[in-house]
Length: 225
Image (tube, rainbow, N blue to C red):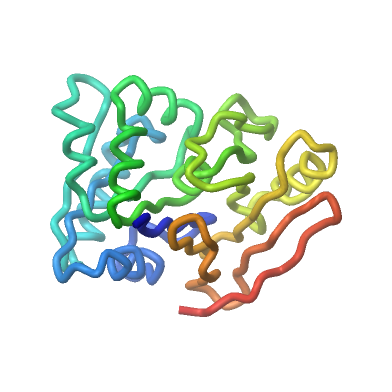
């Protein structure tokens, strides 16, 4: 049975105070889950890795960082062994290309199909869908066209935080260049059980998510954590 996916818009993450990150661990159902952090989208940024180790060091879990730049060490095997995989924000297209070279895409599907938890923010939210709105190719936001496809449709992070996100996403969906999909404000997240949207959660008052179709945007009921 497929596990959970927590697709976050962005915001206050890699923090011991992040309730979305607390939820990510709770979803595993394990008292001490093994968490694999994939910082590929930020080119294995040392700063992001340090923030992950610090913030998750205060939580009850086993931490592991799986890097793919330089000389990788059994990355697909290590990802597949995790209870929770957490994906960093950054360049979505680059991350997907590198994952496919190292068969990380297959390992992620294995984790999910066997009941594990996948999650992340920004690039780490877009990647699970068929498509999404990304700045991976330059400052002009455009469609990704090459997601993992675990979840149907498209996704847009930072819906309330970056001025061009909302109008560009709405426009591309209206024009049919992006399939209908979902959008999340910073500090909000979409929680899927298998491929079904179970609920929208938020760690900030007023942050929420939306369903977007050619008819426009529909705000979704949101639970404050």
